[in-house]
Image (cartoon, rainbow, N blue to C red; front, top):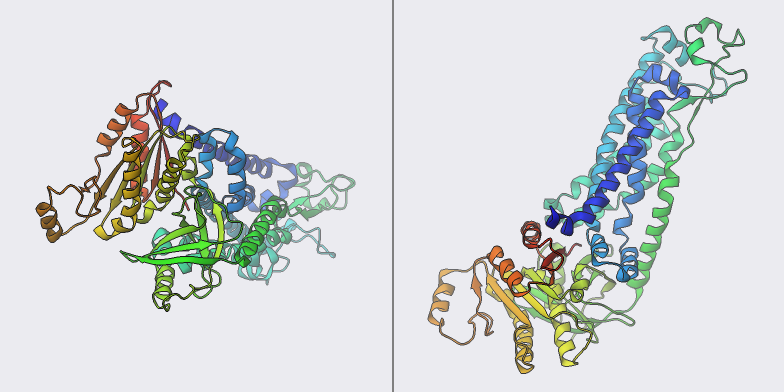
Length: 562
């Protein structure tokens, strides 16, 4: 339990606070509508469905306030910079922004379902009450004369108005349908299988959030849910409910008056909406800034390297940028981790051919004449990630899977420059680097950097500073035969490095045990850029091998999230 608290305690506390606020809002508004005297007559027609419709609405307001904040990338980068004086555990929470965004979206989806079902029941009961199918009180309340059309209780003002007609002819009904359809499309298109295979579908349908928020702001203006207002003399519902015939005839029972509640949703969401508009404006300004190509290289395994230059661009290790290529799409922006070091006078990205957008970009570049400038490119960023904190740890374990090695290319390059310049500010004294690949060609573009580091460490007598292990997880028989023939060679047949390539997957228990043994009193940062399955494994290992004793080894898990 102590190990788990060290790695996940603050994250769990934040989630508990979020859930507690949701529960509090639900219960508070449920009992407000279920017990409030002003809703006595409304409850008589609708029953508990009134409270079941309004309580989720309150939770929806709170979560719609939150949903945009985790995707305000510039805001998060600003906060991350402001938290540099705080502990790494606090900054680590910002790296879980997308996970929190999804969690809030699930809550919005759940509360929307409850809210919608309850209101569909409400409309049916309003209609039946208007037809006189219930008791005399319900019929009287639904038939209250209202020449100004403002003090009624039942929104169905005529027996010819069917529930379907009410839904599609009122402000609340139409906006409710639009909001629900937009939400369904956004949630379903966010499924991983669609996001990975048809990113454009995800990208465009997600922009229905504009329609969603517009409908949300207008939705409450329909004022469908109505409460009893104070009259002079006051109408006592508990006394007058059994004296329908005396309404308006005796002083104790004037005709009851009703009014819709003031719309409140806009007050919840206006702040985040303004922040997000500012975010998009800043992105547009960055898009308009000129980006020049320094170098374009097609690497093995269909990997495209772009070296770019932009005035005033400053980066840190492990950060990422969003790229837009108008020749492919004016609207699509895709995230890529930078592989360059802050010490270099350019920034670079390595782009693997996965999905339509990357395939089209690589195809455009391949067709360029020799020495031609690449297609126009828009750059938004840089944005902070977990890897920024790598030099805050005495010991770092870097784990990359496939193209997921890119943030660590930036880190290792920066280390090389720091050693070259004898930078005294380097706190990190040991790095363990693991790279898992399915094919041999993927190692080639990165092997040059590792060879440079290998040579630099040896020249400085610091061969133990960097321990790296490369794992090939896929091979055929011909490759196996080739390896067997060259088994006694001084360098590896795949990478040309002195460190031989391992075949299969790492034994993580063995690796963590070794790191703990070699660093008995250190704080170890474990960084992953790779699949969720591997993240689950490494997160559990960090918990397992962390010692509760503050004087002994502790592992902190960090994962790249886009």
